[in-house]
Image (cartoon, rainbow, N blue to C red; front, top):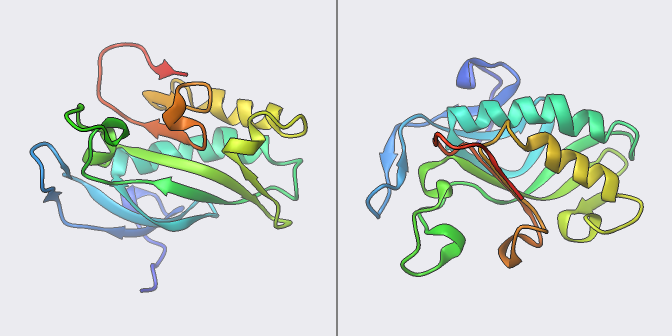
Length: 178
């Protein structure tokens, strides 16, 4: 399916399609304003990502203000993101009996790698500690803090060693950045 540039989330730089609201198989799962996107601010996503409009707009803001500038001097700049997660009706860390994940509400996206214009792929798992990429990886992680409600990376816990988890959870407390 060809996804046309349009007013997805009211923003012409978010390429995708608006979907109908839906509920998931478990109580609390589903998205009231779903979009399925393939590209954001000229950055391609490795797979079509299903999320709510607010999360897509927050992703765009992070790409424009943090990720693209951070990678500007690396490999010709940022070209794409390899995703390891978006909407999924599941519990946190897929643990039986756990609380519902923000993925289950379409409010989360997981980034496992950054693809540069010269073809270089920097994985979160390897790039986090690599002396040549640790600075840029920590910059994109910290730049997401406050913009997203939750930002988890390799230092957070064993479940996030290989990816960044960003979500737009609706909570009154301060952002959770680890």
